[in-house]
Amino acid sequence: MLRSTFQIRFWSAILIVFIAVVWLLKSMLLPFIIGILIAYFLNPVVNNLSRHKIPRWLGALAVLSGFVLFVALILVLVLPVLQTQIGALLSAIPGYIEKIRNHYVPWIENWLSQFEPEDIEKLRDAAGQSVGGAAGWIGNIFKNILSTSFAVFDIIALMIVTPVVAFYMLNDWPRVTKTVDSLLPRRYYDVIHTQLKEIDSTLSGFIRGQAIVCLALGSFYSIGLSIVGLKYGAVIGITAGILSFIPYVGTSFGWISSVLLAIGQYDNDWRRITPVICVFLVGHVLESYVLTPRFVGHRVNLHPVWILFALLAGATLMGFAGVLVAVPVAAVMGVLIRFALKQYRSSKVYKDTL
Image (cartoon, rainbow, N blue to C red; front, side, top):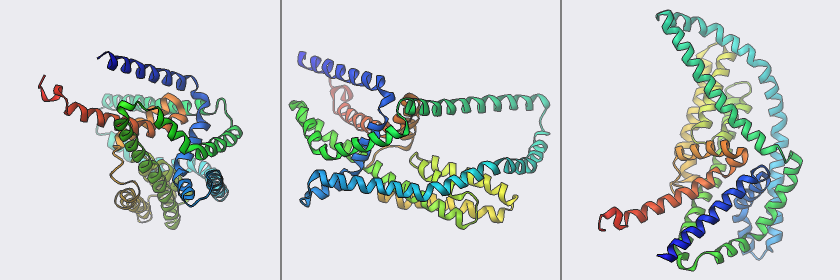
């Protein structure tokens, strides 16, 4: 009993100190978090090279260099297109808003004329408060993301520190995992090791699988919207693909924004707007029945609502760094909660055999 009490206090103290350190240093953690995530993402490739007798440092350098070149190539090819389309889109938005307003405001006013003036006033007040509250909440999240992520480290520092962290983590990954393994309490080694393997399986399944899903959806949406003739389709498609990392958000954003742009562009000609909607319907089917089952699978055990909550909580607490660690933390908590529930169901408390 005394031993169990001491262990609970010891590990609780370690956890509290760890959380306090992370909280105090949250403004400088972004490049380290990104570097560790990149290393985790690329580690299987380096492991495969090591099995073919290639020195670990050489494999890490080659894989990381290839990754950096791939990202740089994507940026060189995509950024000019995005920059042009974003500028044109910002210039076109006022005209599109005017078209939509001229077409739909009379219809809305005609519908509202059925209500009493005091009811309309209440609706306007309620809508104004809801929109204002939502806008303020979203604005605070983005403010936290920007202020906590780039207040200390500028882009140049981020570009220098992140590859260095990623290289050393890739090179030393077996040594780090071996050290962690040696520090596990021997009495509970098998239990903890099993949970760590499940956490790794969950993280690898989600992060690597979801990255492939996002890339595939971004490409599909961009090409599909361009084929059906929607202006600025590349911007909408790439943004929707990136946001697909958050369940339902990517498709919802892409569908709503593209339909609004299509309404403004095609002057409410639904014969031309319908193909835009079809692109996202096909994309949703592709994501739900092909990409996600194939690359993410059912072994992830992370409910979409839990992921969404974790991402929003991470953004609120730690900005962009919090967004990056949200899914790993959610995966760890999910594994621990499932383990705790399993222990509870096998305990005397649950079976009422005290």
